[in-house]
Image (cartoon, rainbow, N blue to C red):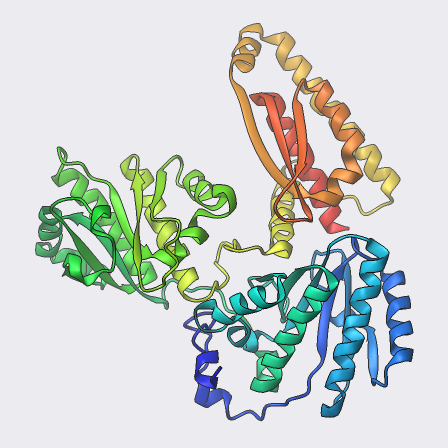
Length: 503
């Protein structure tokens, strides 16, 4: 891969540096090889024993624990394999292979290792349009995910899972790629910046009926008021299958900053709805086809979350499942009330811009990828918000925490019983309004509170079922029962998860 290609997948427009500027810094072929492994695979004490034993086998300067690389809010241990001698690279790789083998022997199961790379080298590891990371997957049979930036953590995480031999082969290919490119000090100091809607430039495209596009283009107030440029595009200007477009449709393109485009489309939706009351008026956003699976998310979780944020909008990606060509387009259809359409369109445009820029941090703190640590950060934020209303964080022993949790459970039960006995009609309505939902939590949390959770659910007459998710360290809890009981159980689980994250 050429050096110019390494920069094709930068993090965000406002944080990327030009290749010529980066070349000012001298690049080093030798660098620290850093990792992080969760406690569920091996404890810190056991890992230290393995590192010490491997260090005795290989002539390497340092194989050691590295507390400086501790990932926030994630229970595990960071370690590094360090030697500035360029001739020791093979020895370092052999040492890494031995470490993985010993960890796997202790686990007797598929393991997962997180490789830590400088922020400035992410584009090089991913490759142009993600081709190199896909090449690694095919060659090694390991599962790789380059996670999104973690709040207040300087390095980027590459999660690698599979058999130890597959993981090692993937690590070796990443090391080779980094060595060929070289790493500068600036790569370590570079930080991912939040997406700034007022600075990020975008070109948003929408499929509308031609009569609607003509009305929009004639209304010059849109351009003047929101500092955007409106253009009418023909069907030939977008690369999309013709059967995905309706008869008499064209394409409207809005150029400007993301913030201005979002403001403009909000007003356009409102004006068009008032002007064309009798016309069928759905929002159809033109999006690169290779973003379709990202917007949908695993088992539809991402698109459901967007719909919930938009307060009930219906969002549908009109794309063939095999459309992975970045040069092809697809449509995202939004239906619902005017307010639903406005809110959903704003959220979708923001997500598309994130995908274009390699997944920068959103101002809201939410990420669009398998960002494990950020999920815990978000949980802590939710807990801190609830803390101001209802709870206080316990900094004492686990015994006091268990006692406090038990008191809260009893408080919930008393409140529920009082409410049900004081108003029978409310109780009947509550029973009639059944709720079925699912939440995703850490697997370690389920193991910790399983008995208490089962008792709590029995008291609340709520049924739960736990089963593993596609991500090994997560579990899915299916909750069903009356609305009030389900909400109470969810509050209890979130409270316990946040306490675990704090610890």
